[in-house]
Image (tube, rainbow, N blue to C red; front, top):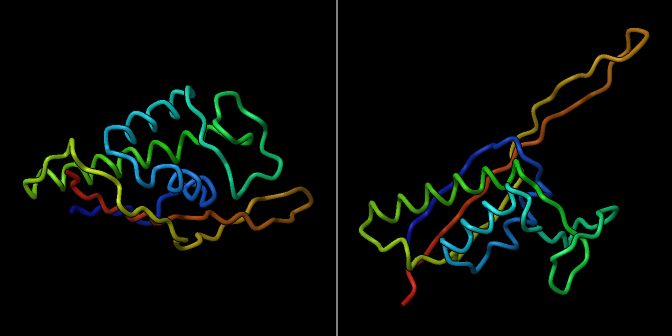
Length: 139
């Protein structure tokens, strides 16, 4: 088994959660092609928890709401590439690897302010996400 993590990435926590739920249990090659299709806006990530005000998308199987989270999918692609190289370094066959565990958690919040009219300001914080991935070789 091999592990990889990305710390405090500037992506949406909701998008990260929905992508992680979709990738769990996939083979590495299948997950990589899925994420490449999401970045190219060919396949949809179904939004099952955070589905309020999310439009319907064509191509979803047994679900209706979905989006194309391109920025989060690109970060997940880098995470999978990192885990794959870690597996190669350990002497495992990366073609037979499967995603055993993938989880996301909230990172630190970077405070910021957005200037407004009349000399006022509104808080505009940047959320970060930490994602951990464990892949395992299957027979």
